Length: 317
Image 1 (cartoon, rainbow, N blue to C red):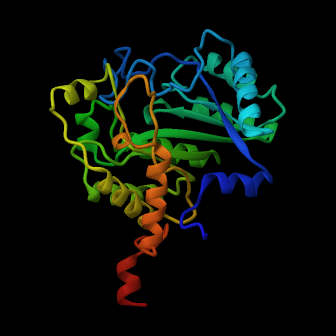
Image 2 (spheres, rainbow, N blue to C red):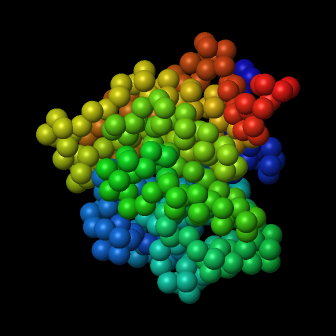
């Protein structure tokens, strides 16, 4: 079957000639939206693990985390190449020297071909980027910075206590791109109060900024989060599964076809979630999105025609 979107696993296989898997790493236990720097309590969807439930606890060294995770992935997936993924919380939100130390430990592993660093848009500056650029040049390794945006609707960002607006995201992307590093955007397509217009505008802004990768997230709700409390009080509105699938399809249609899709749907910690993927597996939701693309005979980039002066091109072809 012809791929109707730019699938991450296939992209990696074309690039490296074989399967490549991420090794989740845990180094930071907080973010500026938790410790009082910008706010307290974190984002309304976040719990105390900072979305890092796949990670080993950070009282284990980076080297030991890599070793344990690598043993598991090799046994289960027969992989030989890996991406070191600094996942939980905001991984640039630590002293520069500590950040350097953690990144440099990864470079001791010869079978790690990329480094992915998850962080917030307001935790990016030139000092950290200059260091990463030196690593990229000196070690000939690709570095990808994953920015949690969630939505381009800055009213919703404020309402969910995100602690930053759209402007900080744009600033971070421009800085990262100027250094020649890769960028990933993390988006939640079914946040409360969001609609299809938010989804389409997210695709357009991501495309205009020439992001390299997109990671789509279906909202799951965990105990201990603000959203968890609202759900128990029946004080939160969530779109249904069919609407989420439609949003994912529309997002892809408006997205630059060059952008690689790392994920279409999320999965959470089963022992802590009180809402996740409408009680279906993440894999089945993914398959339904792919089936919807097939049934509608559509594909990523179908409506990618809005940049470079669309009005001029229409009026004066």
